[in-house]
Image (cartoon, rainbow, N blue to C red; front, side, top):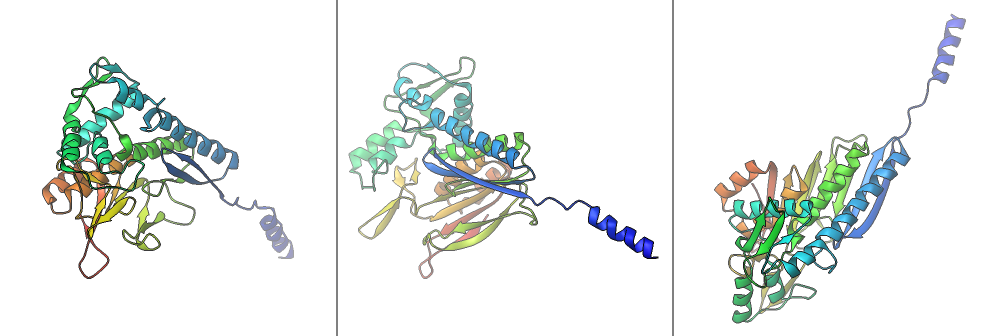
Length: 328
């Protein structure tokens, strides 16, 4: 018996101790937002390479899709696509084609030509202003996804009217987190969280010891508070809110999210959160749902099924409380 006991003790001492998981976190500013990546794994070097590749991918997309950088491919399109077609990068063509599909599916509630309207209301590099009627009508004449012409065979884009311009701000961050996630997965990373300014978040797998990533959803009225917690695993969260940019005039609050069909900011919604399979779909749909509102139940149900949306959460104004929420 003493020999057996000694053997058991020696065996226990010689067993290897399980390696502790490694956590790595990095951030970089691109596309007008802070991109943050948290990743877990067993190999620090593997994590570092994957995170660097993911952030480099976001930088690449910034150079391709930026509305503000004059050297970007998108800015070249805005300068040259009227009156004739412009040959463009295949990746940009695919994203424009997908954007138009979202516009058609949402009956124009999502529209990447809304830039002139944003400018008329003072939301480009400004605090907002109420435009005179002639300014709003002029802006409305220059927007509309139907004014974009795509030729798949030639890989060209053109505008049917002078003054049309494209702004991918309503879909670009979601697309970027999807691409960053693809780079992390390519590096063999199975547990990571990618956040673009907190409004587009991609969850890969789950952190050690937990079943899912826990995300705190910001209060739509008070940014210092949390409205609720959401758990994500291999899916995305996209949030569109009115608290980011707004102004108050004569007691009315006007936010930066426009209804392209009326030319006015949306006033009946505070924020919308969308949990979906991809960031690209979630980013486009949170804007569309913000415009559509929660009462369009038939349309919402169709879009939810078509784009693999798990849940949409509307935060609405309330006469006696800060807000109330509606799940769809």
